[in-house]
Image (cartoon, rainbow, N blue to C red; front, top):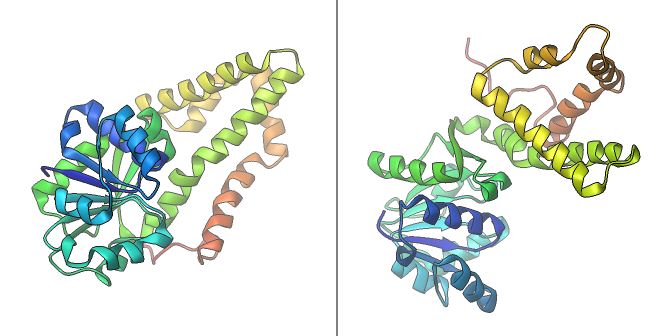
Amino acid sequence: MKKLGFIGMGNMAQALVRGFLASGQIAAADVYAYAPHQEKLRENAAQIGFQPCADPEELADAADTLIMACKPYQIEDVLRRLGARLNGKALISVAAGWGYARYREHLDDSVRVQFVMPNTPAMAGEGVMLFETSHSLLPAEREEIMQLFGSVGIVEEMPDHLMEIGSAVTGCGPAFVDLMMEAYADAAVKYGIPRQTAYRLVSQTVLGAAKLQAQTGEHPGILKDNVCSPGGSTIRGVAQLEKCGFRDACISSIDAIMSWKGAAPGTPASPSPT
């Protein structure tokens, strides 16, 4: 990977390029981007440091590795427009619903493809980068791409048939956590804590709890038990959450997503190995 090109420069693409440049693994002079809103693109280029392109063709000619970061419904038009310009290049897709198999239906065999599903916490350098197992990158090339994406979060390789459920948890999950944080901040405000202070307290509590689990590797249930003193306040709150169906609501939120995607609730994406 010598020169990197972004097709699309929305929030996720901006988070990725900021992280990539901050990591020092690629220079600003070697990062290009195209987006239809040229004025905004130039503003972002001046602020972030990448090189703006006037059209997708200019981008494809300038870069040897492209990141497809536009809206999923725009991809077929982009692929048709670029055509043979993509031949011999590496294409990394961060667009939902566009996995390896789908690209193979549209691209020449010389185009090397990898589907990656990032999430919005990448904007804070704490994302989850799901790498689909099926790909056609060269081994050294894939390792380099993984290291690059690792600059904005953790990298997890995911079997093809689990990419949908993986992205449901990591891609949609931040919204569910945000909803929970908003609710606990509302509770704090209800009892007199100023709004902005409430947000800081709740955000740090969630961040700290998540970091503790990630660093220790302890089962979340054990960490929960460590806070619940016999007859104390925490276990009373836990009991109320259980009474209100908190865990069932969390699982049901994922069921709703997977049902919308066509998977029956509780049905594995593919048969489990015996």
